Length: 181
Ligand code: CUA
Image (tube, rainbow, N blue to C red; front, side, top):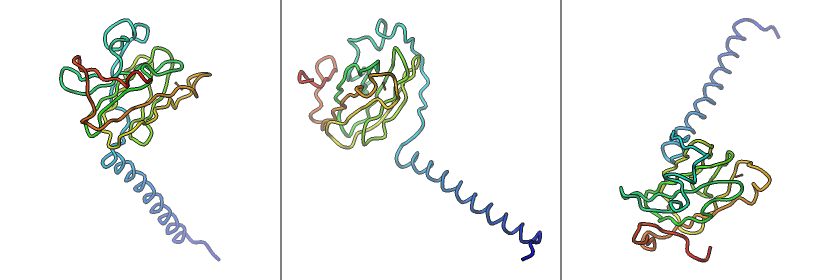
């Protein structure tokens, strides 16, 4: 069979349409995930000094865990460190906008909350922030998903999502998982 220029052009055009179709599907999936499932790349850019993380301001030990901030937002602050989360359990209300803020004094960690859209890297020098709204209640696992050293596999925490009416912060606006943890 003779191959002429016309046939080559036709074949190339066909492949161009196939590629355009695949690109459209990929872009469509990204748009779909962003708009309907709220899966977006982290957009927060905020610096924090990893050397003085525990000494000053936001990420001192007394400040960690869940708290209602003065502006009414529910914020959980967690330090990810080799090889644990501090605290290793946080309590948050379902059906309510919540903010999770993470910082690390040592190496890069990654966190995700199973079954939710919460997933971010925690890079030294930056505050990793995620806004979300949990729809299901229960104890959700929050493992570290970025290899951070020999103890990486033991690095796991719990996000205790309770019904809104069971979320009872104390007089200072703090809520914790309780003594059983
Ligand atoms: Cu922290 Cu892996």
